[in-house]
Image 1 (spheres, rainbow, N blue to C red):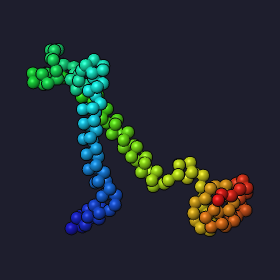
Image 2 (cartoon, rainbow, N blue to C red):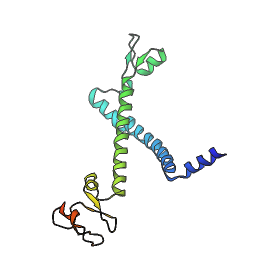
Image 3 (cartoon, helix red, strand yellow):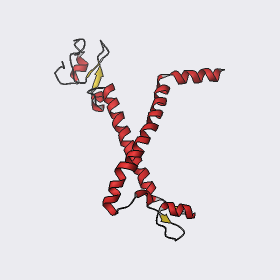
Image 4 (tube, helix red, strand yellow):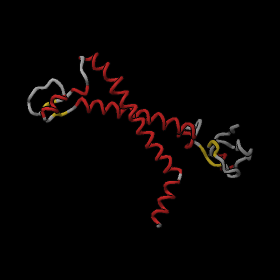
Length: 160
């Protein structure tokens, strides 16, 4: 009973629900990328290069020659299917790059106009406890004058 209660708490927690939605969307997105790579991107590249289909690129380990990968599979020949590997690699890189762009945009929405360097250049106002620029001598949030020891460490200016 305790296990089911813990699982229910985990499942309704925001992160678990978000993760579940992400997995479902990722699977759907993977299908879209798969179709894009197989049906739109690689056929023109194959025609431009040598009028070939990337998925028909293989090495027969039996030494026999076949017209296509399908014929080799029907004959039961052992093959190294490097064309399928190239296609899967391109799919992976596209999915990886798209996920990077989505995560990057989500991070921008969460923290607009902030870069990692901004967080290193901040200190906390002792009066209102909000982040302020490191060299500030007057808090831009509560207009409090900071103590002398804090202002001696920084140049004489304040931020509005």
